[in-house]
Image 1: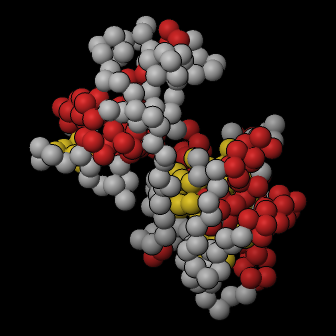
Image 2: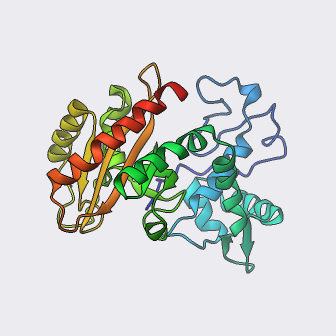
Length: 289
């Protein structure tokens, strides 16, 4: 569900000098004319690393297999340059090929697993997610905002429900989830303006808020009350409730949320049952982040 990125103007085939840490060049979507991005010394900039990661990120549900030319178009590289990166990734085991098409291998999952294994926040959250799950009899999640998406980085719930819901690492368009709506509403003004500037709202159900004016009003309401409710925005009969996860300074690091079927429970009853438990857990975590 990751939105497709616009390809940047093609850049020339990278030389060995391009990939030297001391000789940055202009990768697609990154530095221009050999200059490192703002805030980074050009001597610390490795353009080839950004290009290689860009090749991996170019694969998605709409582009599971690509030729070198297609990969180049997606990343702003020439065919020859894209092919070199693909062949390098193939040698490393991250990409496979039949000689024409290239596709990712399961080895790529190691990159995401390394985050889940090493990140501090998911480990801190586990006992608190368990507390929420026990208190509500629902599956509780910790999620973070990554670009346009919410990413679920920890979960805990009743055994009967753990085979359903979002898996670790799942990405969902932010504005159609309670957690994502909340984190978008709490973005700093500049970041919020940038998000809206690039926005083309998708429709997933007949209930999806696809009118910008309606979504802006909902975000304003969410920001004022400091929690979010989402119903049938992504899937029918699905409800989500989320609260922000803040540190002692008040900075938002993510969201604690529950996603559950609506069933026969009214919105009001669900909020009364779930919201206090989520708030208590988020408050208890505040001094640990």
